[in-house]
Image (cartoon, rainbow, N blue to C red; front, top):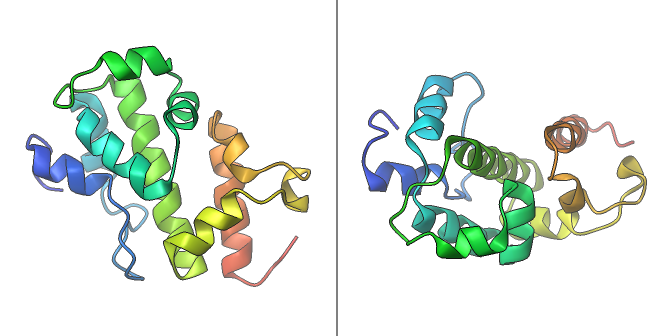
Length: 150
């Protein structure tokens, strides 16, 4: 992600890699993610991520804090706002981390759609409308990774 200006780099930033250790390492590219957020994610990359994560347009719009209609109005090559891009990157990072902890994307996607005691029997996916929800899920992934089930 050295050159955040080209579409190909942005598309890769929003892809889930199913190879453990091949994902984002905390602290290794925050400035790249800041630049990517500021320059804007291309809608096509966002839709690619949505397909990988099995998110409906409604779910995606809720996480991104944007209306479905507004999201639909963007052309595929349009750049999204910095705020929307940042939330898309956070979503990608979360699912990448979950894939690493659970061993594959499908297991993590199933976990995200299961009511869990750690989240007051709410679906983890329902918490993604706030940064606190993202953090709560990240914290739980850390506990699972270290064998500390709540």
